[in-house]
Image 1 (cartoon, rainbow, N blue to C red):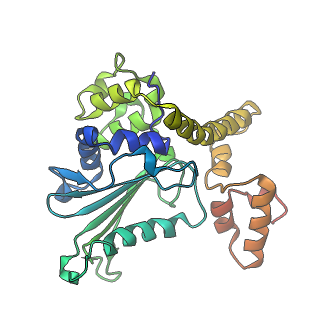
Image 2: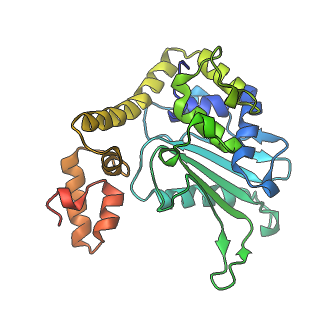
Image 3: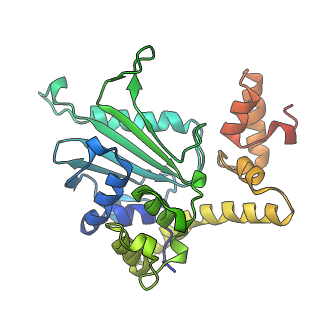
Length: 290
């Protein structure tokens, strides 16, 4: 199996955000982007460098790049949900867009900016695991403000069996969610032909981490292990998987008691029970909120 989990944001950044792996990042991005936005080459603006990462687990490990047309891209792998993540996604997009302008430049120099968020939780009330957001005229449905584009890839919504993969993105998401089943000597034929994927599996299977990198990776991996262990424990008790994941998805940091306290405050502030459950992961029917 692959030695590292690509859903851990540290491993994701080292795999996709290194100069020597741009031939992995490029086909991954093209699997996400619509036909009119396909990329032929790109330059990494913040290539992987361990010294950039303090031990604080809240460090944003994004990847920033610019293509030959001057379009800016920011790619982020997020392990756990955070309060108001939608606002964070917009902030990150606007930050990249605004910082394009150097002194003496005008608004005409601003280029299209594309935000891509690969999420290990469910964020939006949409059925599809990949959604593209743009700005439209509500009445005519015509796209306006072409410089804005934001993608969400919600991994937990992906359920296609490896024998029923339809798109390039299906194959990349299979890699992200099932890397533990693959190795450089065990690459399914359904994935081997996808550009960049064979190298991605090989790199992840042979990637070396020094002591500092290993400590950072293990700290991030704990988040995933804790979540998956909670799901398995609940399943052993006979609960339905969908119900269990529904309570865990959308959780914020802290113990359940802390999340209940926040949920109570949100209810007092007038927020709906549905919104409270989405933000805190607390089911009002299973608590003192209802």
